Length: 123
Image (cartoon, rainbow, N blue to C red):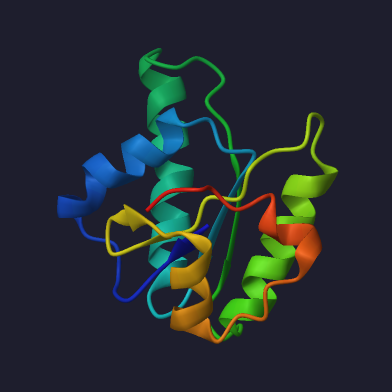
């Protein structure tokens, strides 16, 4: 999940490639400018497939510019829980992965016990 604070620009290409390389089951962008990030991920997949760099490159994408952060994290957490096998929810903001405490502080997220185990344990 990517918390956006601005539109996607070409300078963000390395970050987008890094996110794709982590093999996400869902690319969920939320916040101002998130539509451009979703489009950029879609076009990255098309380009990687077309050039043969990553044949069949694909990731499910969605964006929600007006969704509250706690609702976004809950949705992405449920998606990760239902995946086969269940995945981790990685929340990125300003080019770094947030830990649970930072998610709570940033979005007044009321961390439900069932999602705590899904959030990456990064500092």
